[in-house]
Length: 130
Picture (cartoon, rainbow, N blue to C red):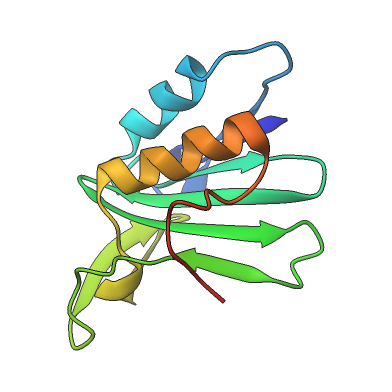
């Protein structure tokens, strides 16, 4: 498994990759906690057949599970959010407007990351959109 993260220096991404072979979740947690929607805007936890992308920061995150060939994407759903609301956040170095229904809080994002780190699958206790 590998962890990729961005780090923006003005408009240049100087992010890196970390090999997570024999690593524990603390490395993923450290990079997650750095997400600030400015210098650090996205982490990608990649397995053999798929990956989990978490973007944003400051309590608002978009979590997307994708197959490696990018044929299928599943967004983590915030069931408590209004379907008529949008939220601006920065992921991958780009500001975007996202439906509030796919912007989750820290707890849900961490549950998705931890489960993926341990199982390389979507957390079945969370709601995912197709």
